[in-house]
Image (cartoon, rainbow, N blue to C red):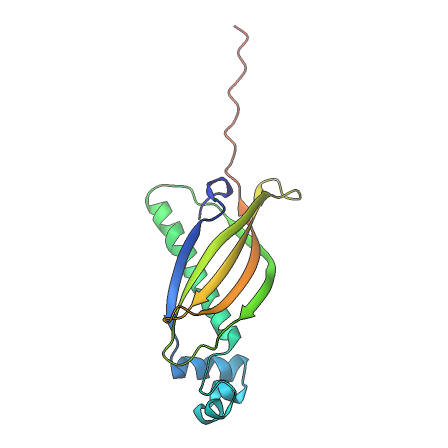
Length: 167
């Protein structure tokens, strides 16, 4: 993970992609959002969605899984190069969460995150705050999920000051 000082407004990363299968959609829905149009093809066909579709919470949970996997890969690569890795978190929450289009069986959603704002934390001087917009776009280019979140990011440790010389 990058240190706060290395993050720029406008930085955008693709964190991963996921193809939603019928089993995937139904399995998540049975456990966490058992509305019939997420669990049964027939109920999905009769619904205003017109077919079985993923829960919005499912699309958000996939984003979380992909984000954690992305951070782990980046951290492991940095450590392998002998580079320090900044700490991240906790997150301060999510706002403006929108599920803009249904996600159907066979849809592949590409998830991206863009830095919107950075600022130094007043309450935690060793941390900065990074605000990002996260999105998911299906294979047709349709935006299916969007939200804004803010999280703490570790600032680069300061180098010790050189000793004073009186000569």
